[in-house]
Length: 230
Length: 103
Image 1: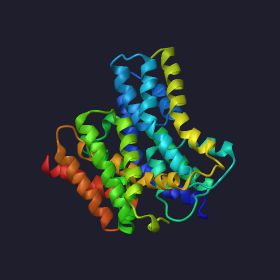
Image 2: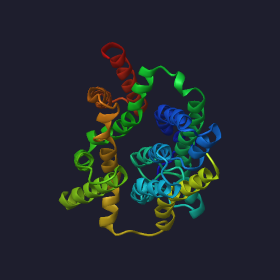
Image 3: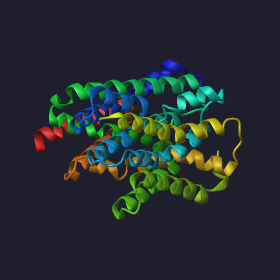
């Protein structure tokens, strides 16, 4: 098992905290223009902690969509997490159910990616706690800050920071690509499948990511030579 | 916002938590078939591919070059061997220069 604990987790999670800075800031700013108070915007980040779903909810609130439909939409957007936490379970140290139920709250696309791409054996619960705590803090604090000052950030900087999360995903993917050619096929097939759904508009984003991921993971497993499995 | 807003947040919190918690708690201590485990081990890299493409190209509405420059910067810096933090900050810096000088 991997021996790293809480402080190593905080260090590994700090790239997420930086990536969240612009996203949370923008969320706070948009929440304000949508009519949410500082408390309401921050509460959403505290209790929901799901970037894409929160952004979408703002546009639905602005459009006057019924709250129950906003909740339903949130569920559809987050269905992909079923797949991620099932995969993550294979990577985490076996532990008491209540502890896993606790840190499950902090599994986002970003914290999942950082945890699941760590090299070596199973990860300690305390390592995951460190990754999650630093990312969650950044998300909540910068939502509030964004609501208060977001509009004062120079426009060119706001625009440039929209690359942050994607750059983080690239930074996590590339080292594994260099080590293992299977990773290249997995990412490429999933990306192309998602692009297909994106341009045909056959599926909404939440479903498209789920289907593209699953299709690629199953397909690559079927075509990869059996004896090279580790 | 009225009281409905808080009910909505409660609902959003519950439906966001369920897909995160159920696999982690219910699968604890259970051994999955080897083929399922292999597929699950592929998931992280497939997810990253689906999260990056094609969205990275559309970070700025109406200007695909912004996304292309950002993507080239991110992959370039990452392939040079930099760690995640440098990839994030470097890509932001490249785009900041790009928007200051070319837009």
